[in-house]
Each structure stands twice: as structure tokens, then as C-alpha cells.
Length: 230
Image 1: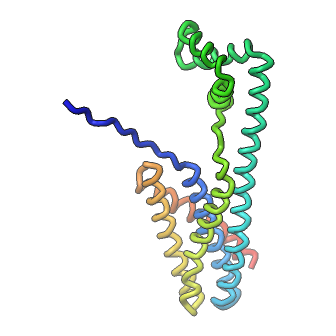
Image 2: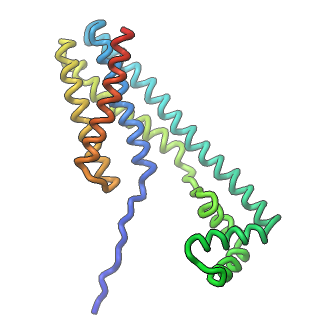
Image 3: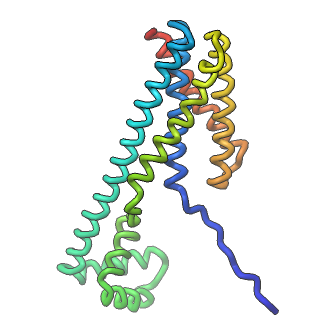
């Protein structure tokens, strides 16, 4: 009988989704709060100009933050790997004991662990990779991660920022534009949560509700502060 191939489906783009979530959530809430806060201070043109300036500055700042964070992760991994390589060379017995301890934590006996430890000691690079993963909990970072993170966060911020600002671009009446901005922002938050659930394989309705609730609360708080200042 022919066997049906076993195919495992795992989500492998968590970093990219995290970057989109960071950029999009801030892009939806911060420009909305600024535009809403300025709604009583001038015309739609003033709100649009201020909103565009905020989106530009926010996208650059958020993208730079993502870049620096990814670079810091890569540098941390490099430093820790060099330290682990030195330790396995200078104190192989102690490091081997740590491998045994790690394997024992997974339920292996000392006898089960012995051949694995011996095999790793013959392969220094694999030994260090094992220690980085299971002792320190560090994964080797993608060398393209910093630039990718910056572009993803910045792009998501811009995409999110234009949603609450669009009504002010299309409508001359500021009060009407404000109400339309509230509606489209809430709807966008719900759709964003729904799409995010598709990638993370969580409950769509729950994700949409949580995103609307948290994003709406953040936007309302930022709006209250902006209105109080202006």
C-alpha cells in the first residue's frame, strides 16, 4: 500500500509577523490620536500636513528601532557564541557535564546521554550550537534580519498611518472626517486582528476583538491626551 507522506505544517515567520504587528498597531493608533487631537485646531489641510509629518517621523523612528534591536540581538549572539566556544575548549569536562544535565532534563538517563555527549565532543561547532540553543536559549540570527525588520516595521507603520488619515484627505469637514476616521480605524483594527490570527493560527474572532479592544483603548488614551494638550 502506498504511504501518504507525513507533512508537518509549522508557522515559521513569527519575527516578520511581530514586526508587522509592532508597526501596524502603532501606525493605526498614533496618527489617529494626533489627527483627532488636532481636529478642533484647524482645517483638514492642517491635520493632513501634521499627520503626514508624524507618519514620516514615526516610520523612520520605528524602523530604526527595529534595526538597532535586530543588530543588538546579532551582536549578543556573536559574543555569547565566542564565549561558549572558549569555554568548551578550556573546560571541556565542565561543559560536557552541562550537556548531560540538559539531556537529563529531557528525561534521558546518564547512560543514554553518554554517547550523545561523546559525539558532541568530537564536533566542536555542533557542540557550541547545542549549548547556544539548549543552555542559553539563543537561535542563530538571520544576517538579513536587521534590514528586513527595519523595512517591515517602517512600512507597516506607514500603511497603518494612512488609514486614520485618509478621511481627512477625502473630506473637507473636519468633524465628519473625525467620525469617519474613528470608524475606519476601528474596522481596520478588527481586520488586522483577523488577518493576524490567520498567520498565528489563533481564534480569528478573539484576535479581532482583542486587537480592537487594545488598539481602541490605546487610541482613546492618546486622543484624550492630545485633546487635553491642544
